[in-house]
Image (tube, rainbow, N blue to C red; front, top):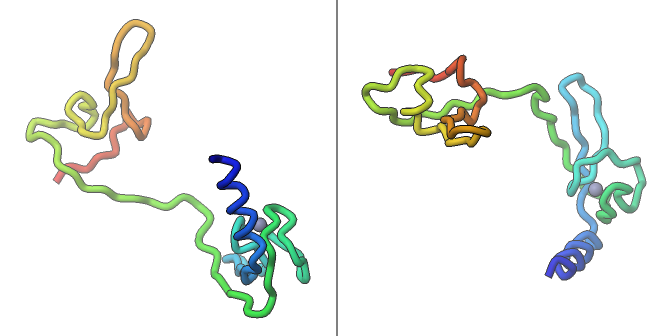
Length: 119
Ligand SMILES: [Zn+2]
């Protein structure tokens, strides 16, 4: 089944896809493969990275997003007696096994420095 998927992918890549022109925040511009986003050289007929067939007729212009980390915020309910750092009562925590015991582990690895804001 994995092989069939490969064949399908190869077939799809034979259809030329429009190259994207990516403008970085620095103002740098480069052409990239629409499938794998790797840079391609002007007039490449195939992406050297993933063999996607490339079309240069209607180059799509794309602004590159910020490259640094972004912040994500999530709101959820916690028990009324929850206090920051109380992983045992935090719905995000999961149980990890150490050699000797099970501990409540923080998926954000912020156990001692709980970043939750309580309303
Ligand atoms: Zn590619």
